[in-house]
Image 1 (cartoon, one colour):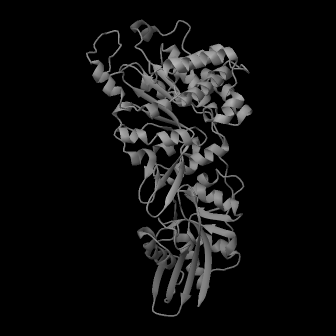
Image 2: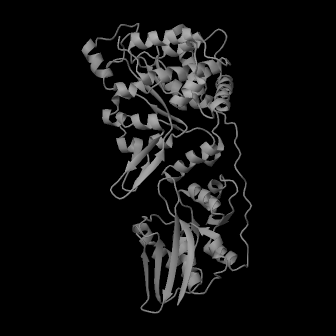
Image 3: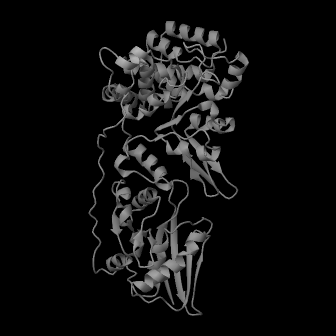
Length: 502
């Protein structure tokens, strides 16, 4: 009889909880049983493991084998435990050394020939392995992703035989791998492509500098989607801590992680037919939705009123708190969701209200019903409301006489303003709490009188009050001003249009 213990990692949200793989080989009728709440893919690993062991010329024990995946109440999914189960069987049957097994953690799916196949969600595994000071054995294809975590010892292998040779002390697995470095990416899109719309470009610069939410209102063809698609070209790189959070979410999703661009803020633009589960996440084993996949990045919602109202209302909580909690009967998962919302909509059902062409024939009741699809509480959480008018044909053809500013030029100012905010409060201005607004967004008495008049005249909420101050702080940062001046506050108030009651 033999017993072996191998450490592996499961998946719960963006965490990778420890799973202890206990393998017991005992006398009895030949059988292989896996216990510990395994799902179908885990149960099927017995056939993959058997084929891999036999094709690697090891003996598969003709005895009663019990594999326990502890803790028993944590659901186990996928083929990530194949390698650990195979090593446990070989160790329990005395075919590989059991010395120092407690120093390793193993993840990886096995082919019938013994090759190691990549798995999803390696980044959270590498983070937890580093915290526990264990070496991580994983498939070679996952090396680049795991290497994003500093100070973790990675042992990348292509075959089960390589791992066994390493554990037996015959041939050591090479641990040479290179940490990915951030690089400047040449974007095909650029703000210089947009002719005219100077006040809109100014608003996008402010939104990028402070990570503020923005809503564009204008007729079709005025460049709303074009402008939103160019926002990522002026955003600063993520910090390593932010990038790890974002990469961990991408790692566990079906889309995978783009290692080369892991320091760039994500940009997501779901179609208006997306369901609430697609937007916030869901499923029996909860997966992240679009708002989590855009964590520390941008979520662009085009044709905002075309989204189902119930879908839009689920945005209210994460816009305020920066995370979303998905509850199911058996479990509860918390996903981070601190995203910047950029939205676009037409001014009326036909789209041409206020257009110089005079093509709109919508009644005031139709316009009211159309705009009522966006609830007041959701509108209140959007910092900037912006009208995007149609540009003249002459401007569209010739552009500015002095030329249009490039994304690189705008990005320099954005990064400088964001660095001022980080040095002052450790975060972007949009993320300031009410207490921090009092500390960092002080205004003069005359500016307070102006703000009080705007609050009373336009019926703005207390939330809008704080958002105006945070927006004014960003405008002051762009002007490199240590104090919020009255012109900064006036500009911030000018961006609160659609939630005015009078």
